[in-house]
Amino acid sequence: MATLPIDTAKYTGIICAVPPAPRVANRETGQLRVDRETGKTVYQVGLCLMAGTSADVVNVSVAGEPAGVQLGMPVAVRDLVATPWENDGRHGIAFRAAEIRPLSAPATSASKGAGQ
Image (cartoon, rainbow, N blue to C red):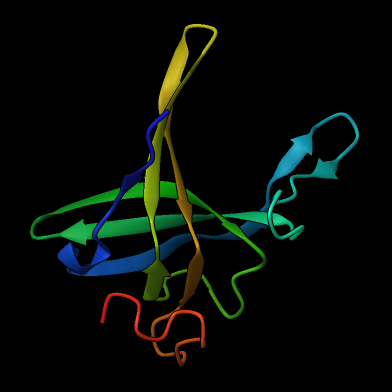
């Protein structure tokens, strides 16, 4: 499926609506989901994306724990993408980001210059 980039600069605000939690790969064993590229645990964060007079809450996956991200906190999101999916008659959109960090935190060396 195609991965669609999302321009987060178009949003008037992005706030943590659900704090980061590790994603579970196997509910029976409790095994956590791990990112194939980095080997880090995948976390899910509920983000409220606000634009003008509307707002949507989406669950966004990110490799590694988003340090310092807490409920109600404005956040910065790097490289947000949406991937449509379909499986056994069910369908939806999966959201993933390279990084989610508190808005007031300094940019990491990997994100410096990205989109600036």
